Length: 274
Ligand SMILES: C[S@@+](CC[C@H](N)C(=O)[O-])C[C@H]1O[C@@H](n2cnc3c(N)ncnc32)[C@H](O)[C@@H]1O
Image (tube, rainbow, N blue to C red; front, side, top):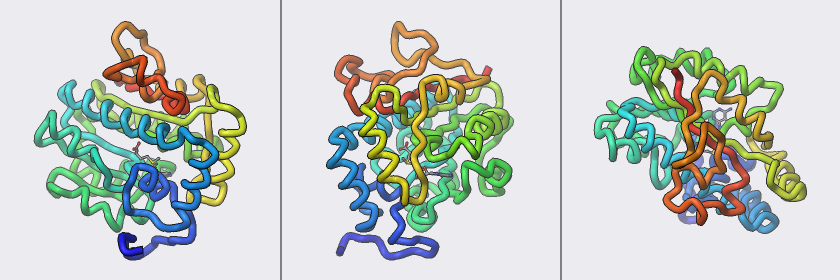
């Protein structure tokens, strides 16, 4: 198709990519027929799928902005995805004009097209690394050249940990990332759940991603809560305690309207490292 991006090194257009599927569902152009086929089949069976994606992306943006409003001026966005509307650096620079953002993803499309995230190269970097390899990721010279781990930062890991199997110990990985942060840092996580969803819809999600670049691992509220070990969870909206929220609810403008079927597919929270 005319609007398809050229093939970049390392990109296999025949294997559906979770980054490109997400891009397609957000209305982007960084995707191929194999990605669109998975997304279209899944959307036909789970009509609220686009709402799920928008609820997650909405949380990502609101959380990034909220963290910037706490005076944080450096961000590590792991599993950042392809350039899209509301990129993290645009969102946080609306609050902190010289904020620095390191984008990290393991998808070669992000390497190929991430330069579109570098509107201000001295303040942004795109790093290709795997969240399952914290030594490599946290030791990346480009990352260390941009972010100062002795000062508080915002760590954003939204819509990513459900692509990490239990066998890779996502809780141990989170402990590594949280451990690397200075006190006063904030951590935003969103994660898909099977808790409130018809089992058939969960099965569709698992089956459609079975042959994609990464597979889906839905988790319970307790399992998602454990990602915040060592962090103080911030109330997700006025009057709430330190609890997980559904994605749409988190600091929603209209809490009742935000409580959609799609929103309930994922838990989220922002935690502060004491
Ligand atoms: C659903 S998208 C979420 C994008 C963005 N964080 C958001 O919430 O809007 C998931 C992203 O995580 C990335 N990802 C999945 N597994 C990863 C891994 N093991 N290491 C790094 N990135 C990963 C994918 O390539 C994709 O870009």
